Image 1 (tube, rainbow, N blue to C red):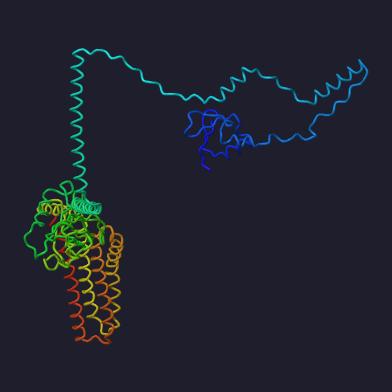
Image 2: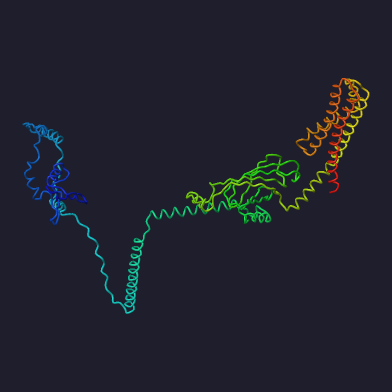
Amino acid sequence: MDKHWYIFSQDHHLGPFDPEEILGMLAKGDISRKSLLWKEGLSKWIQLEKVPELKKSLEGDSGPPEIPYENFPPDIPSPPELGEERDLVLKEESEKISDLLPPVPEAPNEEEEKKEEVESVSPPDIPLPEAPLIKEKKDLTKLQKRASRRKKKKKWKVDYYKSIEKKDEALVSDYQEQHKVPLNIKILLFVFCLLLGGIFVKSSFEFSTTHPTFEELYAKDYQRLSSVTKSISKNKVLMGFALGKKNKKIWVSSNKKGPYSLIFQFISMKEKILGSGKVVFSGQCTLTKQWCQLDKIEINEGKNFRQGYYKVKVRAFYHSEKEDQFRKLLQFLNLSSLIGLKKKPFFYENKVLMYQGIPSQFLKELKKRRRETYDKNAQFFREKIEEFKTLKALSQKMMEIYKEVLSRIKIGRKISRFEGKYAVVVGPLLRGLILDNKDNFEKTKEKEIKKSKYYKKVFNYGRRIGNLASDMVVVTSKNKKITRRNRIRLLKLFNSKVKKVISLGNKNIGELERLISFSDDE
């Protein structure tokens, strides 16, 4: 069956339902016979018991079931025959029965029942929307009419121009849709821009970090190094070196364009640095855009870096990892060798001045430092000259003692007389000079290199004289007999050796005298 019936419940309706469902709800007690129903085509709500379709079903109902016998009240006993006693008994029995029976409701008034029937039958009021208030038309003045006409005209213009703008926007949107760039092309353009930006940032960063500025380098040194980078000669390798401010960095320029990995070794030239001793240091850096900054050096020999002349050796290896993108592309396409961009390693060696100033100024400072050093050590040099002269005299005295003893003995073993006189006249003084200079050399070989050098010379010179005396004793004792011929041979042999010792002493004395005279002349 079709569901077309609606049930009104409190302030709203339920449904749709078919008749069977409505009868089932009635049987359950969810609705009553007085409940209001409605379907499409009816002008108002009607009670359930007045619906033709459901009326037959309601009439066919046999009514409520019979009350079982157990639920009936008990039988009333027959009244007794006695008068007063009978009335008392009846009163007691009636009270017992009244207690068993439920209270009887009062009978309703007929007017109230009619009102309830009308209220239950009539459908609920449907609220209607409020009707708009009708304003009374008033006669407009001429000014008001003119103002209204202007307002309408202005509104028409605004609407007209808005319609034109909408048409233009539609045309622009159609054009944009027709000429819209695909998403994949946008992504490719974005990636390409990122690559170009990265290359630009990287190149600018490398240039900013490798190119010197006037704050880091003196103007004269910057001009000198820049002239090396602008050199026309391409076959010959040229390099320039300069010290940065406060001796913290070494700047290098070249006529070769990088990237190159450079390995340096600097060896100080003898007596051409502002300090004593030899200085050797090394380092490495990467040559990019013809500039290189050597900020970390390793001292291989000596204590600290000293300004002065150095012999520099440079080995350069091509650094393909740091080349620019253009060269990498050409290398990838194997076009570097065709257009002459292929890099080769090179070697450079030259003498350079590591000094914050001009060469003439450095020479003046070098002479000044030498003069100060030699003036400070003049007394020491004079003492060493006296020691060399003493040792030279001891060697001559030793030869005189040997000639005297050799002219008197006839057997080689008698040379022991020479040992006795040597131990008394020459030995103590010679031994004292040797031991003193040896001890001083051990003390100053690390701290005062210049002095330790001459301590060692005096020590070696005295030891040579002592070895010569030992040779005289050993060689002479090997001759069993000292004949005239042997005597002449021995004198000739040791005379030549003594002369060599004396000439060596004169050479050392002359060197020390020149040092003293240099300081005096300056």
